[in-house]
Image (cartoon, rainbow, N blue to C red; front, top):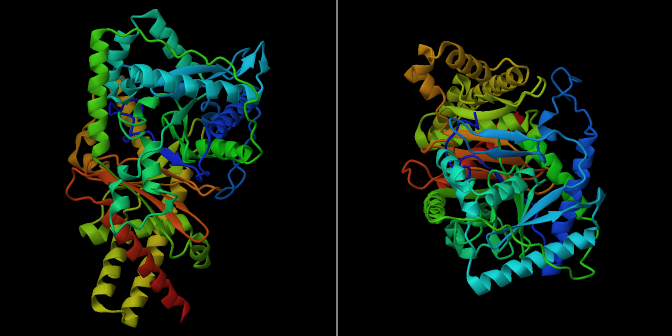
Length: 545
């Protein structure tokens, strides 16, 4: 599903996550944090090498079933490679290696830091010193010679375009060596410049309802993690094909971007929150200065320079079209929802349906991810939240608001709400137990193409196309920390809507495209707020009886 998609990875595929902002950092503090992440990654890789990830089991719905752990073993060993007709996923087997390394990106340049010497881990203070040397070296090169060729921008282009350009790049043995070093690294650590506060226009408007930390609002921070801000800022400081890219900014904003094809968010968030806990311990600062590693040197022909310029233009156009809004609903959170004896996820899914209906007077095909790790190699299936029961309830809610809160209308809405919750819950259970429809249809479709060399008529029907035009693409990304993950919409006239239910609030990461006249994340956020408040009032009427 991912590898066959030829759209650019930024916005269209790679999610970004903002971690709890730190205080503004000195260069030494920023490098010490980078070194702690690097040592944490190395320790985690050693656990993977010995198969030491604890076996997880289902905690509900047929409790105790073992869950597939494959995704966890791909996070630090995998890179996506552009190819035709579809991309490849290159995964190295987990095994101890005498050398492990990370890539540090700074000012468009890529540097290698080896985390082991003669099979032994390098001291954290030496890693911090190496990162510090890299930042100083990259800054000096940038000020003396201007920005270096931004090879990383090539990874932002359409996959079929990047596949062709990569073949041109690979004509040089030196370039092949560079790409191999990036692909085989544990991760990238991107030493970024902060995005200017003016980058996100919503921060300058009176109707902005997001949350601010310091000078930058959370929407601004999310832009940096999802795509970097464009060729004038940090987008060239990435290699979007690499699974894990950690982003550190001197103003304390940090997080990561990840390539989605190897793993779902659950595995990624578990790793990152483990690393986050390690960074809460006192950091180790550079005790000495050491020569900076040299940046990877690329051999670029005239056509490759032109391809970089084309990629910059394409990604800048894509990012300018992105309508992103991080909205914190502060009215209540998952604790209050649980008091109503309903799953917070089912409750929020119905709120999303009501919010969409208010704006469009209809429902739409809705995607919500449901983990299928009870099955070998399981990833996700699709919970389809736009049910007939949800439709009946949202229509009744809108009539109730239009006609006034008469008791008989309220009772009817409560009955329909209960049916909609029951249907949403049934859909969820069916999916996690392997009784959804989308994985099966996908498998049949691919099998037919491979074995019959044709596509059955059912998959060419207009109804099937409409069924899979997900104008509302959603997922719950729960975290222990006060973090949030966002991504772009999957269709031009749609919304991306991830959410993180907190104890007393709900964080929504909403996205759309500005070029679509029928979508607006600000309007959707306002509709969500009204929907959540009206649902609270509806359920309060039940408790008063």
